[in-house]
Length: 107
Length: 107
DNA sequence: TTATTATATATCAATTTTTGCATATAAGCG
DNA sequence: CGCTTATATGCAAAAATTGATATATAATAA
Image (cartoon, rainbow over all chains, first blue to last red; front, side, top):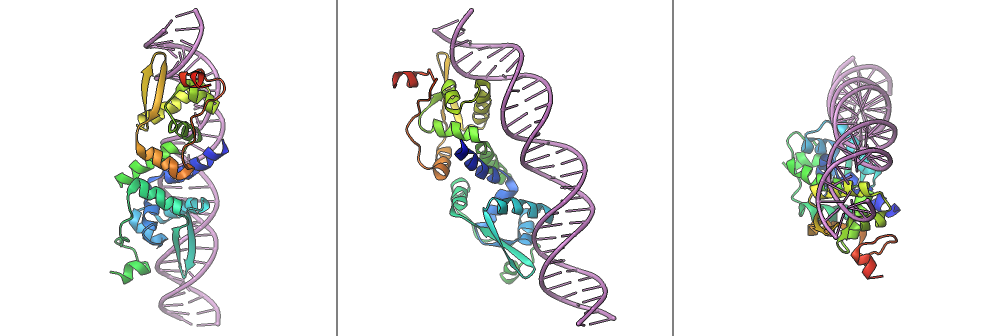
């Protein structure tokens, strides 16, 4: 059945620890790549690749602002699935080593 | 983070069309292997393989009854995730070619 | 202004690991 | 024995991961 394939594809996107961590962070607030890099402790290229997958699946949307690119969640379904499995979102994070506007201004 | 891995693993189990179809059917009512075989149109060995994965992940539980083995959903989380993504469950199915008690008695 | 350097992000290529699915076979029950 | 279910094995296809490199914007020096 075609429908199961579509749903399975969605779950497949979610079936990855780092993507899940990225989405978990994004549901708190939009974030740039370097922020997500600091949050996850993964190399930049790796994050960009995961973001591409999320972007292609239309789970996130990107917006350029100066030299940063900010990502945020696209739809509510993702948010609800995260709530269902991981509970409510916590407060925005300020990881060590992130130089994004949010992290520098709020510290 | 260990936690994301655990959640990702759950999503991973769900990220497969046939497993999803099996779970979708099981949320209507418990079912034996031959029933799921008829519902999905897949060979028996294949269904057994997928059921094993679902069993190992503790998403379903099996109970032997004569020469049949009936499977049902273990937990509510699965049910809720299915509701979230695919809507409410429909009425139990009676696929062509299934000779299980439910299908023969109710037809 | 132009040239240069730094920073942020994206893409490409190569390799290893995992998955999907079929076939064959075994085991348990009536 | 016949029927239902489970397991083992093999292999092609797909995905994960890593490293190298490309692009774009901003900052700074000449």
